[in-house]
Length: 131
Image 1 (tube, rainbow, N blue to C red):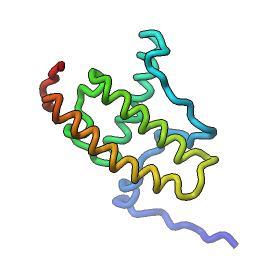
Image 2 (image 1 turned 180 degrees about the vertical axis):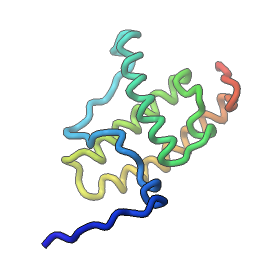
Image 3 (image 1 turned 90 degrees about the horizontal axis):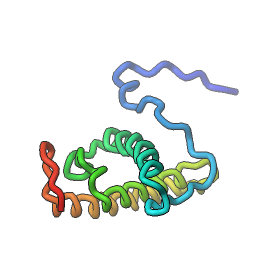
Image 4 (image 1 turned 120 degrees about the horizontal axis):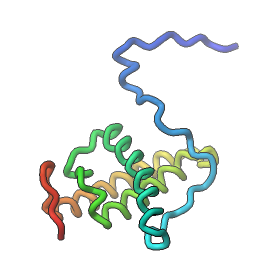
């Protein structure tokens, strides 16, 4: 027997994110940034930017974790790319049941590393600083 769901109140509908991505299907492929041409890297970066935008909004990350200029910092590109890869694996249809929990644990550690890099960069919400 199937139970009918009631429509959630408007405030609760705002709690859940709009559908942005399809669930990953198979195992993700790591990105070796140096193996791609500049044009290919730009396309990959556009894809990563969409995911990072979603991540920052979903987890309410501010400029101390994901600065607006993150695409100008190779270390942040590498870290966020690896985090996206792990997310794809954790939320794929072939993932084990506790994979999302493991991803969140790794995400907590990654946020500390990213925050450390951002603080050392000296970037501010209104100003990028090259090292």
